[in-house]
Image 1 (cartoon, rainbow, N blue to C red):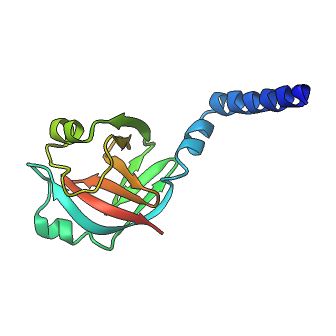
Image 2 (image 1 turned 135 degrees about the horizontal axis):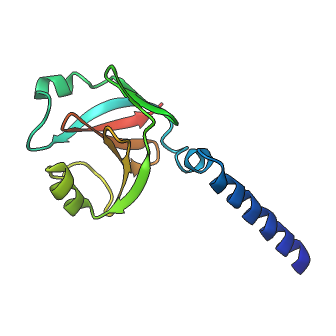
Length: 144
């Protein structure tokens, strides 16, 4: 029985080592929760300085964002080869220092998981729901 457990453990460790060595495999495993199509459902807030008007932000409700392994596409723009690097951060401090916005009405957990897509950030809210930062605004997005 002990030998069988050691064999299973060795196989598991070999799989992990191979996955970590092959480019893109580890990231694909780690990011399966965000890959797919996301519909913008709500404007949650904005930074002190934004790149669009409130009217333009509200006009994005119902639009689709596509998060794929090699690209992020939204509102007619594509970010090629995003890193999707994850970090866990203090919610209030992160939004105050980096986003220049209040997270008070965003419903995000504290600490929050932030995902860097190079051209923007996503924040994990709960399974199937993320917050997308775009043009200085924060949007709820639901996976479909």
